[in-house]
Image (cartoon, rainbow, N blue to C red):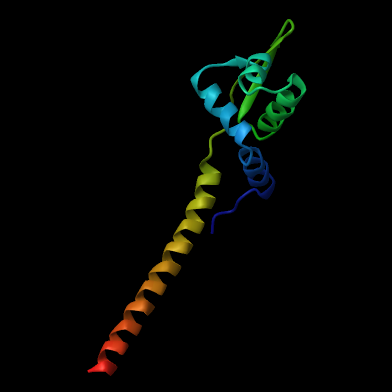
Length: 117
């Protein structure tokens, strides 16, 4: 069985649970940006954007670098392999359950048809 780091998964899914943070990741996927630029793009205060960027940084999705008065954000090196594996495990579990349900429904249909004849 694959072992997952609970703290890491929690941080990842918490970071990705917010639409603004997902939007920030999409934006940074196109180009690096300052916190000021991100705050303007998402129509929020600098303080609010700093909090969002901090959460993304803690999860490893974003890195920041301060040069003078400007803090530039860019995508971090962190990939989503562990999260994808966790999701895949549950996708397979649900697929197996739905397949079993399909088989049961088909069996009940056959029995119903046989009883009707």
